[in-house]
Length: 315
Image 1 (cartoon, one colour):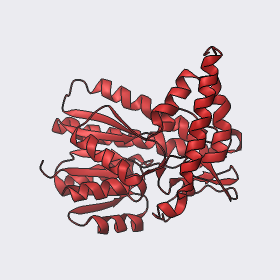
Image 2 (image 1 turned 120 degrees about the horizontal axis):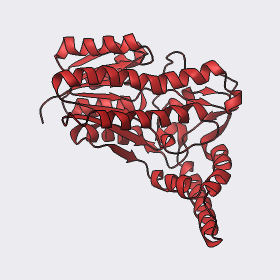
Image 3 (image 1 turned 180 degrees about the vertical axis):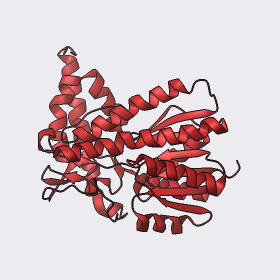
């Protein structure tokens, strides 16, 4: 496969950074975009080769349009556009300041819409191209204290499906979704927080590198959706097939596994502006998560078995 031109929004950390490194290892030409110039430049230095850095806020439509034009001016085309930019907020819905809730929706739903609009405009002119939108397991389930993020990701799922329907007339234009489960990235600690404790990814936790490899896999062989996460299917099954059981368990499990014991004062985190990220991986979450994962899986399995034994009706 020849060298591709790949635009990555959300490239300064986490999955976006991992995808950038994976594409760079393949020899692709990269256009890296995110809000923070310093972190972008660090990723560009790690990638080496032919890299264009364009500071971009996906929630600002003109920024995204300018990014597309910069890619075309430098490389003449866009073969793949992968959007992993996202922010997060923790807290009960009524405790989230409305402007924080609104900005999470703007970044995590309207941001990808801005990206899709710019990318599809280019792809239509070219007659080909692959758009990869980063969804989440939380786009298929819900969890307490994550109302803004879940609302945005459910909306993104609807947008992606609609775009696939609308591009059926263009067989060489692909709209794909990566669906990560829990991932070792800085988004949890950087999130806005009104829950009282710093967030963390519920176990089992995958590496950002595994998700970055998933982005590359979609670019190589486009498909509608790629779910990456050991517990994704189990959790989705519980959400759909056993809603009373799921709803009874998800609150305590979220409190135990999705929030650390490290207190935090109310903060809007990086929702309104970039903050330096620390990619320190294992140091953040460690191996104790494995035991917690086993406990959570055991509780879910036991409750599901009990519900089925009693002939629980799903409503």
